[in-house]
Image (cartoon, rainbow, N blue to C red; front, side, top):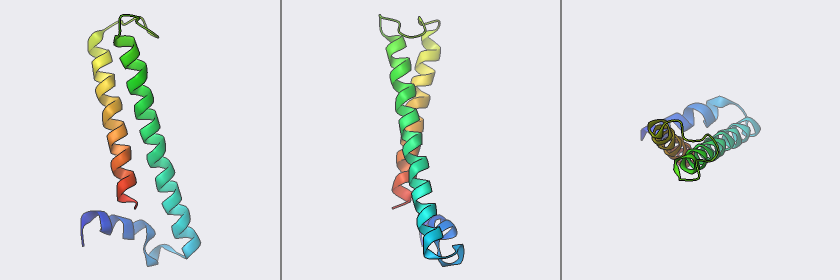
Length: 88
């Protein structure tokens, strides 16, 4: 059994409760994954715009911070996508 399958059974397996509870948990895990992806994309877009010559919305106080938040946004979006793949 792979690690992903084991974790899924821990939350959604037969010992977790009835079918309605398992379906609710699956949907909740998917919703949290999608919100992680959306927030990661939002971080990426906001700080990528700040890094452009337009300097929208923060006026680019530090390019290093912008790059750090861009990387954090991409990482968050990837982790959300990876978590959603694990729930399938």
